[in-house]
Image 1 (cartoon, rainbow, N blue to C red):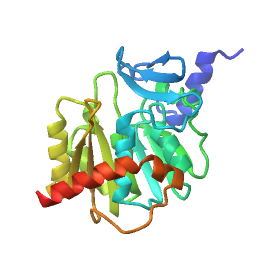
Image 2 (cartoon, rainbow, N blue to C red; image 1 turned 120 degrees about the horizontal axis):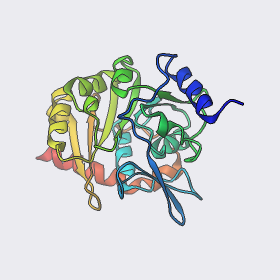
Image 3 (spheres, helix red, strand yellow; image 1 turned 60 degrees about the horizontal axis):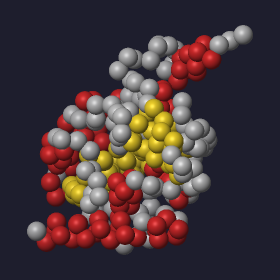
Image 4 (cartoon, helix red, strand yellow; image 1 turned 90 degrees about the horizontal axis):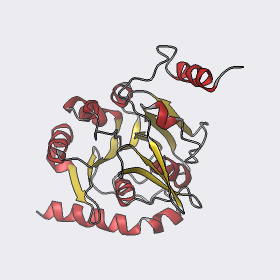
Amino acid sequence: MESIVERWRAWLAKWLGARRTEVPPHLRKPRLRRLKHTLELQFAHGVSQSAMVAADPQRLLVDYTRTMLGALLFVPQPRRVGLVGLGGGSQAKYCFRHLPDARIEVVENNPHVLALRRRFQVPDDDARFQVHLDDGARFLHERRGRYDLLLVDAYDETGIPAALSTQAFYDDCRDALTTAGAMATNLYCRDAAMHVERLQQAFGAERVLVVEETRQSNRVAFAWRGDAATAQAMSLSATAQQDLAAVFATVGSALRAQRTG
């Protein structure tokens, strides 16, 4: 009888185009932490990468995941959304549910994380939703002008991977956007200033906005290619617009403050 390991290796070989069947040693297996009402994904002990409410799996439980969707102020009607980093799929599930006209593409480099997608109730792949097992930097480099909205939230046990910290990566983020596209990235790191500088180099200082989280050590950086604000109605569901109203107010206020100096 085929063992679980053999089936898993066959599945992995399919994802990687039969290029290799072993998981690179630096891609560690995350641990799951179960609480009364939530399921959390962790790499470092005590630090949760993702959290899901079992009774409401599409809910954005962690503050910064909500703040990142403030990028919809810059691109209110995205047709194609890209996400670098799956984790527990919080934002991917939210976008899939509340942006019904958008196609969602996610790239995740860790097969151990991808293997947990059903535990976190991440939708199966279909015409609107796809998850790719690939290196995020390489994946974006090959997708010029593809996304209206790009969300970058990719971490391992050491923090933001080196490949997603380079100037070349942020240049590729810019180039992966449409001419009116926008992105948001979660900066939970000690060298956040470096990441912001590289975003400014890629997009221009006037097209980068940083919002600090008041209840966390995170900060969210936004960058955009189009106008900083638009009068277009959002394609986001009415439920989500109400859910994220405070986020839009916060990001809009920060943008106005930046403009007025």
